[in-house]
Length: 227
Image 1 (spheres, rainbow, N blue to C red):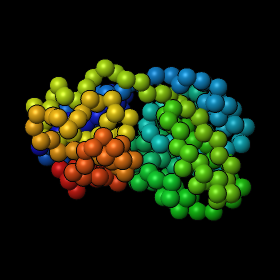
Image 2: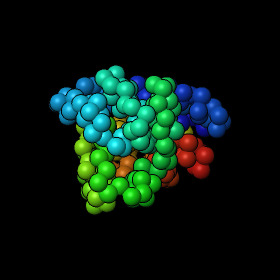
Image 3: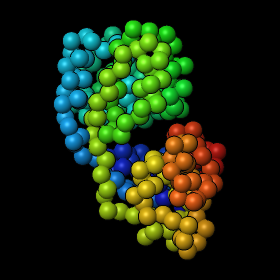
Image 4: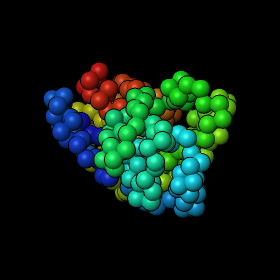
């Protein structure tokens, strides 16, 4: 199958090879691009907390978040690092650190994976998209949580409709990437719609489109179980 995917250009390394491994061809459409956060101060404060040993657990939700934080500070080995997905973990390794991998990005999975976090100080480096459910979940377990935007996502000007005649399916990798894609029910031919996870699926359903498949938060799952 020829499959379009709404992947950031900065995070698309290895995507063509991954698709070929599953027997498919990737068409990368970056509906967003990364930029510096609107307010850099929270990220600087997180780096200061790490340097002072005030962070016990550091969570990365993307490889780009890893890059942006590690450009400023290298956490000590005693800091417990948790990465969402294998690509994020690989990026941590490239900087000489080790991390645990959580395959499915959900508030419940994080709470279960981390175990007893009573009194633990948790830092989160993420895109400029708040995740109140995750914060609430961790704080309800007795943790102190400080999150910082490592980067923000802005429209790139690229849209999906221009490639629809040449693909069999499209994987939306986030709710925001779907909202900026220009994809609608009025597309000229039936394209299989794949949501990388439930939050992305919710955004697609709100537009009146029912996803053909909802993954567990990873591209690999979408390619393995649907495509």
